[in-house]
Length: 135
Image (tube, rainbow, N blue to C red; front, side, top):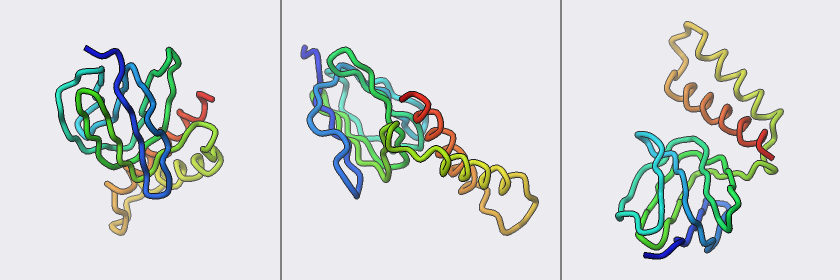
């Protein structure tokens, strides 16, 4: 069995990771985090907003991803994400403002608020802040 799998992460705007030989990955699936090792059984899953981590050449990398899909094959993992950011790409001040806005919306009793969307925005902002702190 191989020791690595090829990892690719793509967004509509850019290719974030191309052909990295990864030893393992943790992916934020819709129903929870998935641990991926070389030789994993094939699957396709929807992604939620969260931290995506992978280990390549012994170094662990952490990214902030939001929504999309992952295709897992025994020798390759492809992530198609709506957004994906490295820690150094995250605007922490902007993420903190987004978090405050989402918290205010969730605290309001207004019938105009889309609570599911506000919860998604809060989760994404918190993930971005956490990943940025891991620079």
